[in-house]
View (cartoon, helix red, strand yellow):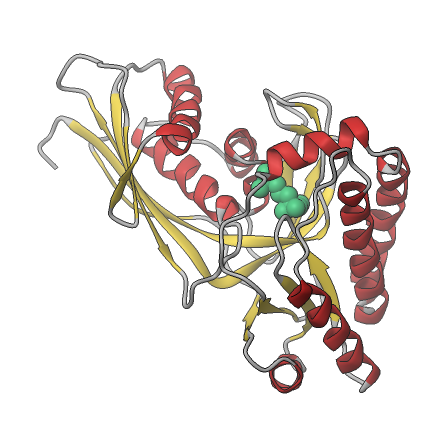
Length: 333
Ligand code: PMV
């Protein structure tokens, strides 16, 4: 540190929604149409450093490096938009250099925006000298990517939809179950339709959308009840149904959004077979073709083994629950 820079480094892990967020009530503030429930995962981690340059004049141009390659365009715009919120809150006006590393144990092909924006929110707010509590940090991360507000917490998190910036945040939920997620990698390719656009299509054009929102409220209530009771089979059945309902709103959008590949269908069938073989295994999918399987820590190795056997050529990896956002270093304050 040269004494003029305001610098912080933070890490956060990706989370997978068990009860999904799909659709915004407020696009600018990212207020969702429904509350959601997630599990933060071990190993899928983003570490981000933010340095505000307080020495020179503001040029209005931040710089962004992701895994050591400089990024411009949409990716930079999204990061700068979150930095603008932080600059506003801190009453500062300085360009920033952001450098982000994804430490994924394999080519994940998983939307990593949840870990990315949680780490960015933590690093940027600390670099700007703000001392946010967890709820404030969750609200800030939400402004970058909705799902990121849940990655502030380790283990299970509940994002309260709320109705404005102050009331829309996530909190930690105690879970007596030792859950695990087994990821079936169907494709590591980047998705062609961003989740933002796909959500908008579901909300605006799917006749099934309102019904899915209504059943989602019920799903969440029942999922929380199943968690409280430690009933993984009950939780899993709700999780699988909630995800299929979300995809139904995409398939019935006009024009339709179809993230599924033939391999996704093969994976869904393999999950059913593994479960019929007596193990807890329940599928969930997000805005992409990969299939994630909810199971218990105790059964994860067997689920992983059985899925590999049923799906030759697919990468299969299991993840236990992971930690919440954490600060690595701060300088300049
Ligand atoms: O936060 P976004 O824009 O990446 O949207 C996430 C949407 C889903 O992953 C499909 C569901 C969820 O709740 O994470």
